[in-house]
Image (cartoon, rainbow, N blue to C red; front, side):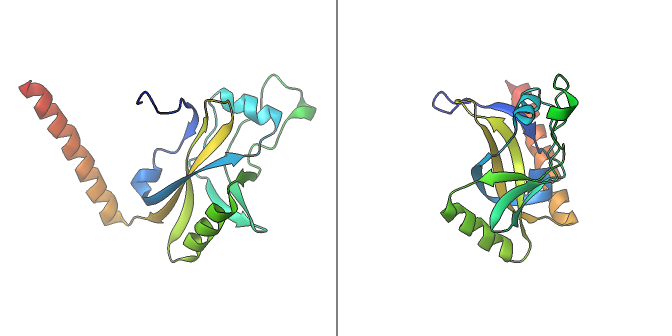
Length: 157
């Protein structure tokens, strides 16, 4: 990362998101978590591969994300690993994202969950449009070409 970039500790990442979707815009959102969820996230065992963000009652929620139970806490303190978690965004950003969802084929995909330099859990959400099979093949070709090009340049010195 660059020297002026904020420090991030990655807790979960959706690496397939850029392969499966065209990401048009990204937004940083806060996430409401319980104590055991935060401790479990710091362990880095969370998964957001099948997760998405959606509107429930006029608010934005992260649905179908998996944050495992915290092993060192008692059974009465545990959280539901797949519960919907409220996302905290500004009203203007919320309206912008909800209008994007209303357009044909747009969805909100979580790209990563991380802790910022102040220790707060954040979610990077991408406003995305799904790719078809041909688009995915094109992405794969481009990625392979970039890898081969880098190899050739390295070999030449």
